[in-house]
Length: 346
Length: 116
Image (cartoon, rainbow over all chains, first blue to last red):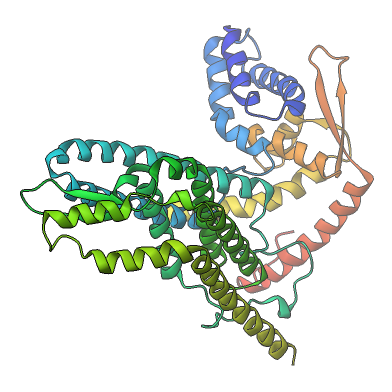
């Protein structure tokens, strides 16, 4: 009888089992197969055919493995899977939209290089999609592994269940708008794509059919590039916060906390970048004036320089103002949440 | 008809799953190893394939309903299982529960004579 078939069967089962149980189960399966062979071939030494029949009777090794394991293990289990697909869809959609925007913007500015731009954007698209897939899978894999999500999506816990644990009916006031989160994610991805691949195009465009398009950048791109890691960190943090909001779906102290964290981070990054006056394109006004020389319709110097001077001088003030406004929004939400709770207690 | 057969097969599997445990526990007041248990259950009309029984024995041991011991004296090392004190209590209780279930089902499905 060919013993290696038996060894291979046992190996196929034990290699997928936890180390601690392997040796024991291996011994047990050996004994079992011998016993089954013995019963089958009482008067003659077991043949290859007997062994094959015994192994078929034991069934597919994978099924045996599943039975030996106490519970099925998942990278992303059935509880999280719908959320996983939902987030993937949104992020893929955001990436697709932002790539289309990037393609259009760059194509408009450099119509002669449309084909190259198209290929480049396609490459970026593929790498962005794979990056997004990897990171989202890692995030969901980790929360499956550590069971972070269990409380948030109202899964039954070990402790005794009470009627008061029932989730509140979704209240329009503390429901998180999905559309808003989706829009924010799309916007963030577009922003990320623009600063990564089309930094030169963030500025004023002067497009005239027949004449080469001119763009006058807002920023000192050399210096701006050194801030890219910081900007990516901000974008990723914000996207994570939006995903958390999408999964939890309502304003509670966690989502509000996440929101505040990302706003504070945005504020700090904004202040770091814009406290340096050199971040602006120092040639901007000169370039606008030069553009105006090409023809009076190309740029309205007085208007643009007015806006430009105001913006560059007061940017820090504006950043702080936006921050304060968003914090006020959050505080109002918190107060509402609190009154809701008090109402529930009464 | 094929679909119906499949449904029946699935439902039967669910029905058996619970009864198999009672059957296994009932045979383990004396130590037995896996394959002898397969045969003795088979003899008494409960067929169970070893691929199901062996993992089940392990699970029951982990739940401390069974105790086990390797016997290496024989030609072939065998793992013997025996009901633990906790297992005996659980088995008794399961038997009572089963009799109740059986009784109420007998009433429900038409009050046929109890086959015992």
